Length: 276
Image (cartoon, rainbow, N blue to C red; front, top):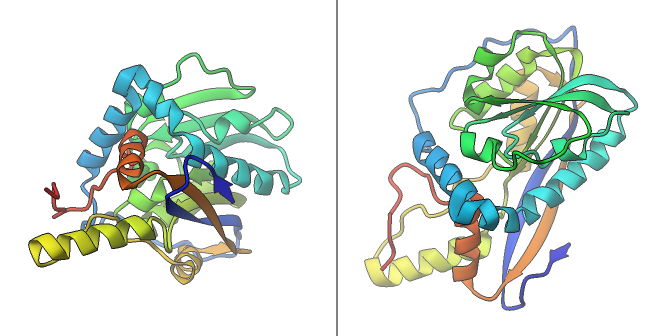
């Protein structure tokens, strides 16, 4: 699929979309994970990036770069509608301003609980009208167990936020523990060859000018990793899809500008701050 912007340099966004990940009442309850000693991302930097992106030019620039998240939310909703069940509430983890929640209709859910680590992103669109009742909670995705009780949620969705958590296995365990028996988890995260072209270009430039490379693009999970992690967390009836969204940019500078406005800048600990 191509979301046209211009036609010189492409950026690939590869989303692992997980559907029909359900909790079985017979699944052994794993222990709730906590963030381990190995930190990949600076979560404070990521929160600042998202806050700045959501408020730049009064939030106007942020809304113009919703195209990737809106596209993935649309594809997630197609899968969600395949589930012939009505939910009293859906927890939207890493919701942003509500890319998925704004698609919910009353015949599928009565309420959405939107949770995001960036308060400014969460409240970016205060005048948005949702068909379902909405509750907003400012909280870290990695601290889900602090804001919801075990076995309390009918459904949890996550649209393009889990690729920034440090302890993905632990977060998946928290999601599983928060779900009721036979609860649903539906999520999407960037993975695989996402931004491969940008990663390669930056590495070649840095080798030429600095004599080595440092991380400029976040490490990504692959399909096998996702399947294994979901299984280890106690989910059953797993389905893992790979979707590719292609967006064309005039050059890498326009791409990097959009990434900044999305709040998707580099937050890897030990990152090289500038490439002069």
